[in-house]
Amino acid sequence: MAEGEIKKGLVGVIADETKVSEVMPDINSLTYRGYAVQDLAEHCSFEEVAYLILNGELPNKDQLKEFEKQERANREISTNLKNIIKNYSKDAHPMDTTRTSVSHLGLEDKETATNTIEADYKKFIRIFAKTPTAVAANFRSRKGLEIIEPKKDLSFSENFFHMCFGKIPSKEVVKAFDVSLILYAEHSFNASTFATRVVTSTLADIHSAIVAGICALKGPLHGGANEEVMKMFFNIKEPEKAKDYILNKIKNKDLIIGFGHRVYKNGDSRVPTMTKYYYKTAEFYKNEKFPKISKILEDTMIKEKNIFPNLDFPSGPTYYLMGFDVDFFTPIFVIARITGWSAHVIEQLKNNRLIRPLSKYTGSKHRTIK
Ligand code: COA
Image 1 (cartoon, rainbow, N blue to C red):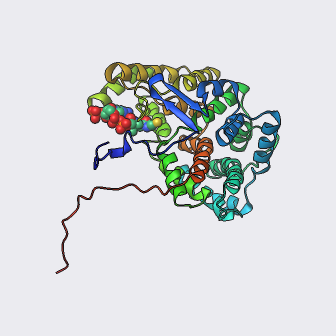
Image 2 (tube, helix red, strand yellow):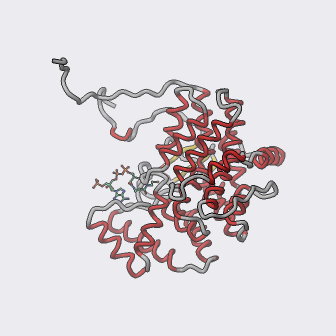
Image 3 (cartoon, rainbow, N blue to C red):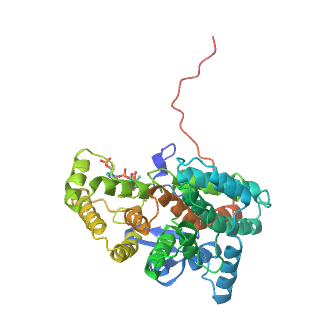
């Protein structure tokens, strides 16, 4: 890179090393700690993958049991937080309420000020276990429904369904949800992860870093895309209208959310696996319309623009079919990404240097006050 050259959007800039995950756009692959994400999605539970991301190795039976025990033991949220959630405005966006709830978890955590790797791991467990409870409580309370307490005898995904709906769907649907969490869990130096690393580099605490991640994830160019995809499906309504809708958008040079990626230019490595489970979910709910719309949009975008769908394209309709409100899609992404963010917080802390880039000044020339 030539001296003084500006890399707008930090395109192509390697900001640091990481051992957490590797994105390989040339071979359309993504690995967590060396394992292909497709294999993890097919063969592991979300809890196993969460353990892998944080600890660097897949857990053996005892390690998994202990990890699950810790997560399950920390699921409950305080009465204070439940009351705060009940008092959130019914119109507040769930990403704003999730941000506020996680920030509140930081106020209540006895170890917030203890900034060691050991304390961060324990705080990660608490944030990981309690955030789904806070999100589900908000999901219900804004509809005027009673908050449902977490259950210790359920898996992470089963428990989330239980807390949102008071029941657990079929095994296939739970697996599709688990797969979506695995695929959303980690993705190297994306915008929200970089935000968590910037905050950690100042030696601020892990709750602050995770809140920064949530703030960055909210935007429609990042995590907020899965909501926007669903809104596009609502506008299209019928498969017969899908092609004209997208051609019109292309003609108007509109941004089509759910397509394109900063790193992948020939397809997002996570999409084939998520699409498989999206179609399975659609089949389970006997919905033929959504997959038809998806196929038309995807084929047309590739043919006309050579731009491929990203993970938000299949995950949005999958979550909708499962019964989640559209504005809760990105908080679900948060629940998954807490694992990746926390691993990066710990990695940053292990070998920290304050992140502080330069800028090229283009403002007024030096002037004096008259
Ligand atoms: N719809 C329409 N055109 C798109 C597009 C999309 N989703 N994504 C990229 N393009 C176009 C750009 O406008 C640009 O066109 P130009 O050369 O005529 O200016 C060209 O494709 C190259 O894209 P580029 O600007 O280099 O992409 P980027 O790396 O800066 O941006 C995203 C990546 C993700 C921000 C971008 O693809 C986007 O905004 N996608 C929609 C939002 C989304 O789904 N985000 C979730 C990401 S996981």
